[in-house]
Length: 254
Image 1 (spheres, one colour):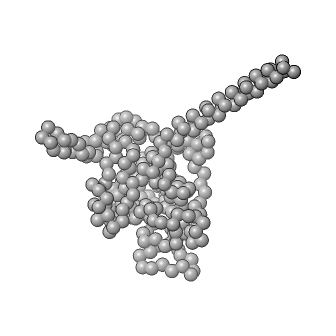
Image 2: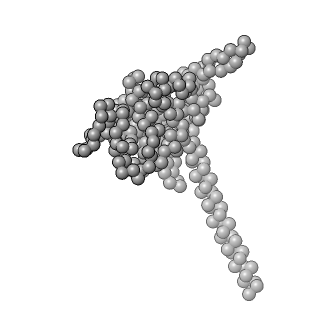
Image 3: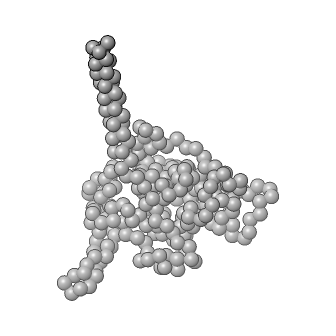
């Protein structure tokens, strides 16, 4: 399991490297996937988001934080309050100071935020040979065409074509700038066992973790879109009312 954590850490660290312009001649544009959350009426597929959280928890939470999400936020994607409380209690949260002025650890509660895997950035870099596994809270929003890019990168590993030279320890992925990156494919079939019985293929896990990370990056998305629709309906009605009023006023003048 530790090896899987390291592989996933390396894969997401790759997302922080420079050169994100898809116009780059040596980088293939991301595959265009139809996501449930796309468009004006887009919504989060809560079942997929729950599976994506399972991938995050079992594979990448040992390396990557989720600092902007509290345990209780998970109720927004369908987890019950009892499930959230049970999950939070499995984490040790630093609290204090107590009456003696000392910091202490206690079991997490629903209002706590996810506990980072490392005490600080230096500790993280020391564990991964200088690489810093980034926090995933805003990963999808932090990358151009983020959802499609992360999905494409996770599923895009393959054999280097003729003319592409890979150094020892490098792997080919056309969606990464330059095509060569120093980590193997982070996901493999049946890497997790989904509680709902869904087959855990690389494609499925990639879609699910992207859905979860999209929600994590923008938990208010559905409320924002619903408000936008209401505003457009209001403006349409108001415009129609003003048009009728204008016609009646100018009719009397003429």
